[in-house]
Length: 422
Image 1 (tube, rainbow, N blue to C red):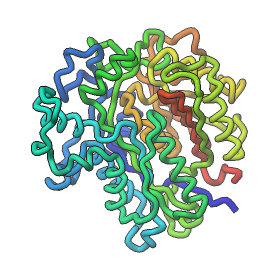
Image 2 (cartoon, rainbow, N blue to C red; image 1 turned 90 degrees about the vertical axis):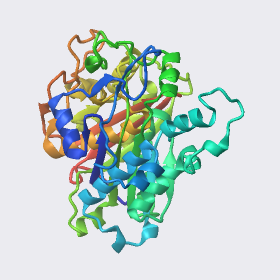
Image 3 (cartoon, helix red, strand yellow; image 1 turned 45 degrees about the horizontal axis):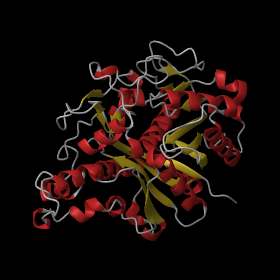
């Protein structure tokens, strides 16, 4: 018999709100957290907007030692882990620690600290032979992304498998998919899983400027990210983290846990086509959606809401709209779709987990978050993209998709346990 996996705890650090309550209030209000970059002088760059977190480590409960030791992305992960564990009501000290695992997604690891320390050891880039004596003792931790999974595991007392999943912008979905498999196969009973990212730095701005993926709409940063809108011009960088507590269903029921949703299906594909290019028919994403539906033993007509990748690029919007039509057929036209990136930007590897957290909350509260800044619908895109205002709607099955440079395509289905056929 297949072991079923459910979400019993959520923890979030996001632009516009630290904590699940603040995050959900931002999304349902349709409020945007995108603004002019304040972390560094962005004036030399083509795109100068981002969705930054107003994050105070001390106010979030981190000690001075933790603040110094941990990269910003690791700080997000630890704070989110604490909230998720508290929300789950799970006493990990009463469990076999070898049966608790960690799965953390991240696309660019400890970018913020690595860039900061490189500037120091190279004397502002003037020295080719860097001087290691100026490096902080934590530099190796920043160099190795696995250090973040270790920090999360230590916070949770998890001595089971620990891994960082790094598949670009689908990392946050893929890390959850990996965690689900570890529970299903019987290796773990509990997984602390999710993703974290703090990529807003000069090197990241330079990388995205080079491929013209980020928006040049710098004069109106609050409305710069415009998924599915005729005037969209590129993505807006973001940062943040979402950590979920995942448990085997029957174990969660026995302890009386609050269950947000079951992760009923997951699948991933790669288009083996182009580093940044996507075909408009959406075949690869559609294949991932179809495989996730098969795993969940659900029909496409069961899907009540789609959380889109919705990055705000013309190519992505056409691609996933094509994928939804290909997989859902006529039901695609009756299924509400929205993109929360319009409000919190694109936090690369973290966004998939942030979106799954939003999907779980949408099921919990019977409210679908809107697509902000969608004032001028693109006539090429003809689905229901929930413009501007949240919508009340009870949902039993939700689809969330991700698309990443390199050709990665991932799809995950959440369902109420009583609705799943598994």
